[in-house]
Length: 356
Ligand code: MRU
Image (tube, rainbow, N blue to C red; front, side, top):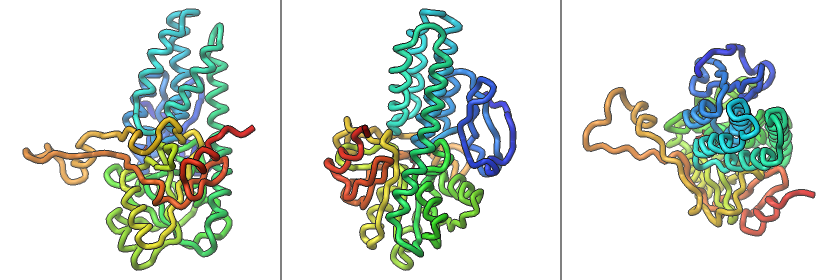
């Protein structure tokens, strides 16, 4: 699986972490950034599920798009192995993809859309499914740009903003959700300073967000996650702007671990809090954050930051990688359909409704 495709700097054409080239899925390996820019070529749905689980690609919309291309690979494998009886083998591969990560609902959303099309197909399914995945990727880019504009309009002028994790081009088809708002607002001249929390334990903030913004020439100040409250007290930013992995019907938001503590500190210090996510991240079947599954990853992600070697006897490690921010701590949820502010069951239902 780990073959090098190219090592060009992705900044020259804009960062697009997911590409379909020469009939295979190419992923920018986010485990290696920023030290190395390396691409993996994936030819099977099983390898695609592994890549999602191992964080080669991460971020809710990017996980969904990757799974959509994984469905194309699943259909190709199944058609080659079983011909017109391809559907059952395809479904087995889809289950593997669906289980790769539990919290980002975009994974389920993307596979549901691919499966709906797959169910209508007779003959070789690859071309139609590929066209659907490519449409989803183009739509995601357009949606990011629309949210970027809507979110930027909420930011005043001469603003300082803080973000957490990476909700940027690397986490989407390109441009980003939270970072899409920051990019647009920066281009408008509304922002004077961007802070990014390093995002322990996997360091999406320092490894990915700092790299991504620097590729675009947007200066960013990194700080340890634990330094945020002190920053809010002494030099409060105007907004905290983050992405989401799942938004419940009542406006509760699941996002990278540490988002909830930022929201608590932000409210305490009068800093406004914005969540930016496409409607594919809204899960109306989840009544509240209590219904959202929280991924727990292995101890090595935490322990490797402290030391090499085994975890000492008597020490256990907890590694929940997402948390729930209750709706009442959020000032605005920005989607491509509009802004829910304040977020509650009514405003979320309004933005989640399909557009005519
Ligand atoms: O574990 P990750 O890196 O997949 O977590 C990503 C996040 O929490 C992002 O903030 C979220 O998926 C939104 S990405 C536009």
